[in-house]
Amino acid sequence: MNEFRYVVGATAEVRQGLIIWSDKIREYTNLYYDGNEQNARRTEFYRCIVKTRQIIDSLLDKEEGFRSVIDDQNLLASVCIIQETSIFINDELTECVEIESLVNSPWNTIEHPQLEKRKGAATSLVEAIIRENRERGLSDILKLMTIPDAKIFYQKIGFTETNGSGEMILDGNAASMFLLDIEQKRNSTAFD
Amino acid sequence: MPQESPQVGESTTYQPTPEQLARWKEIDELESGAIAGILPPEEEQARIVKEFLSTDYIADQLEKVRLHKEKLQKKLKSAIEYEQLLIEEQKKRS
Image (cartoon, rainbow over the protein chains, first blue to last red):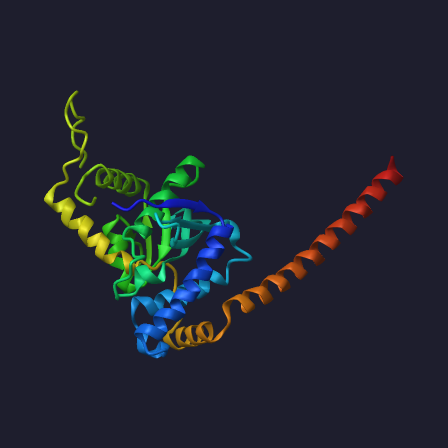
């Protein structure tokens, strides 16, 4: 199982990582899509470009909300922005932490094999956010909005849909189950 | 579900169930597309991607950082002025 290092905030390492992402996005577009971004439409890589741009646009005013994971090559593998918010659960306004945006690196997204590719970055990032929230005494509940293609990933790690709008939550019990599952995966030899 | 704690001398390696193995494999395969957050309509996506690829990233960021710095400097100047005003007011009253 691949291990990642958790980073809090838009540190120099994260900013440098996003510069590398930007270079790689251009390189892959030229190499695999004849330099024409339209050829990449509707791919995970294309959505990665859109989301990367949105995240970069928040570098200056949401820097404290940045959370990332760095892989064993010291490369930025996945990045997201979180914020404390609230959500109605059973007609009751409940505090939660929202993953406002999350995206994996271009090499983890593009379908062509890349040496830099490391599986497990997004899972590791969600795991680290839950652990951080618990350590800081914040809500156990995670909330996010997702797109139809990504829904099944979040379902598999324990998120449930709330109202069909794409909004999903991971409640305290599901978060505990998810942490236990990850720990078991880490302690098994199946993914070494 | 968790297994029982191992006895002394037993291996601590966890033995996953076949269902767990299948689920872990599936999660690994789905990982790459794990985007969170709203995506704009397709036309807007096309504009964002085109603009991103046609812009010099470093120059663009440098311009944004400088504008941001200018705004912060104005705010800092304003905060210093207000602090000075309050200090003077405090002196008058003491």
